[in-house]
Length: 384
Image (tube, rainbow, N blue to C red; front, side):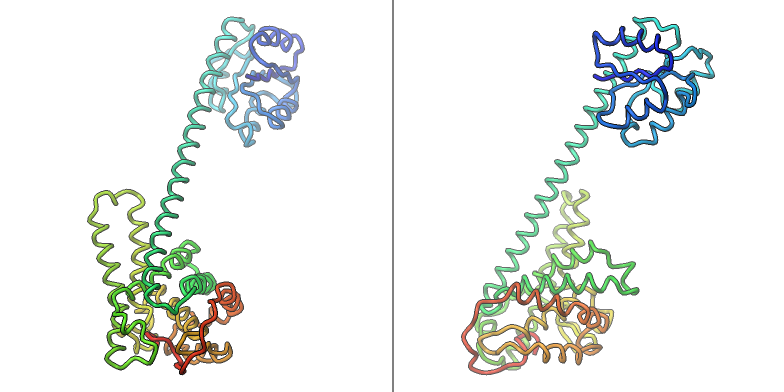
């Protein structure tokens, strides 16, 4: 261990250095200003023996400034001084000294007090390092759990999408669209206080589950290459309710599980609630003409309002075996036309600001080319 000895009298420095050097690395300073420079630059000492009565800057002021510096906050300081009244000792301990030794110094007492304080410092350092290790380990395991959860949820979403052979990179695109919209929307005064960056990430992470209920739609309807009949479209419309109910059931079971009383529980359930809102409400329309519940305006949860625009944009912009991709100008015209009818006006306003980002996302996750369509449809199934 390294000990810094601070005293303005050379004889005192020599005496304490002679006592300490057989056991420790010793550095010396003959003024308060020099002591602060030594203690706060390079490697901090493990302990400081500090005289109180020094010219220019006394030991009390040295300790105050040392404690104000990040590197000096935890260095133990023992006052070594000829000031031997109870009041002097009380003042020294109150401002942060760990011990108080009066002069003339008795070597056995000095060595014993130094050894005790160094052992205490070592114990504190070990405890701090252990706590830091535990914090890092908890953080690592939480990251692993989040990665496993996200991978599992994404696998569920992909499983549903694999039944619809024409969606390609739909999940990646819509997830990125939703995040771009959410981050832009939080700049609006109406959402600045209620939509945090963390909320935006949660909504984006839940977005791939929007069509998880496709797994409950018969293949004859889901994979039909032509236009759906009115009866088939009614069946297709059920997928939103099926998805919401499935996630709600999972939430109820999770809430009843005692193991989810841990701190992670509410976070997991809030994520599932966002996923439920998106799955069940992303086909609702601002004017109330959507499905399955005919919700309107702000009755529609915000995550679902974001998903609505992202899903329609992707449906219009991408090629399917039954339709060509729609030109960007036409897509933007339809979104503008849907402002206040199909879409939340503020979400459309947010889209205007990130339209270039949407274009970049669509190019980044572009699908493999499909065969040319045999006939045209304006919207994909579910959006008709």
